[in-house]
Length: 386
Image (cartoon, rainbow, N blue to C red; front, side, top):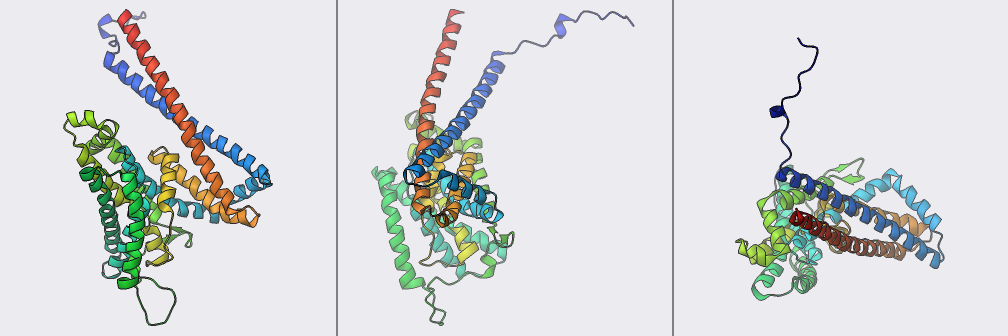
């Protein structure tokens, strides 16, 4: 064996990277850079919001240090941690419902009415069937989704057939859903157990329809459904043919139609899926806390979900994190009131946070788009010169 290594054979050297490999590597770098810019802008926006909130507290005569101390205590106490997750669960689902429609460039403000409609019919139907536990819960979930999809489908049909703005129709349908469910509840589905109780509600769900609680009743297992919904949203939008069609049609319906994608069909389908997901938002309350529908139903999930979707940039990870932030602020409202900080301050902090994130993200988006365009033009110029 020779002690001197033979010179490498030129034929065995790895081939130079192809143009396709270089382009793929460039796309990966651009995606990573875009993710870093997005995350950085969101963090910066939250910090700006905190600074503005501190200034607001000073102006109103409150001590920001006391607020920070109370919030830190809430964040490190297990009871409030579970409460934060519990409050965040319906926000995640409602935000995903809004985000699905947004991918089709639709502004579904009707999540509030859709989840109320879904929760009502899920409560009614679930009380009159007898099924094994898993099947019973599954049946109620399907009923809630079907009812929510039906209610959202009305707005989708009006958009496709008559050109009615989904913003106007979904706002009106919110009010109509509330009135219809109240009428049906009072005239047809109000349950009387003969005890003369003032706790009016629909017929209670049997125990086979209840979602179990964890950690000594401090957290309902419906959080699993919410996380499945968020994960399913990511897969649907990013890993399926339908998701590609949805995004393509939402970005440019005219260009998409030339490729055989029906814009009207995508509008209707997106609204149906959005409404189906919205129909799940109220079911944590129904299956985990109340076991029936009544005047004490929850409200505000739809509009909080809209805020969470905007805060999370319609991305599933962003939505989950934004929902936890929103849930944390909701959980902190009670302890803050004990420290003489009114609930309105928490609402204002939420509003400032949302506005800061939306404004900063829009500014950064325009800057990054301009920067990307300039880079592309420079590369084209280099190619032409070569």
